[in-house]
Length: 144
Image (cartoon, rainbow, N blue to C red):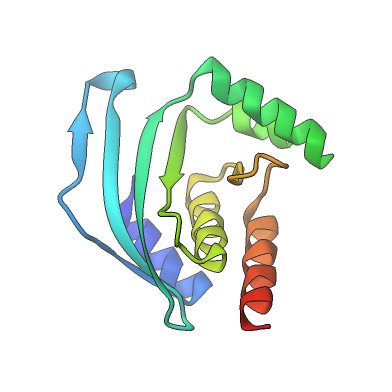
């Protein structure tokens, strides 16, 4: 996980910022290494949320989930893009995290990892634009 690049993309392209809350945790070695990063994410509107970002090796179940979401969302090619990724960045969000923050952070991650996002409801695979659109829609819904 390139924290400097994530931070740069957050401010430059997404009007957001984040801070690493704790020292990154690292378990395992080589391809089986798992890195865990706790961060505080703030959007331009001032909404804050804490997240945990885990980087791990792709597993067969990830590929199955990606292909199923590709079919559900009718997004041809996104499953193949997911299969090209060597690592999964798994976002763990608290139950009270604003949906707009979740999707904006997903868009940021997709922009840096150059891979698709599997949203929490597994309804489809999203690229940067799709995740950003969902963030905008969630923000509109929230503001009513």
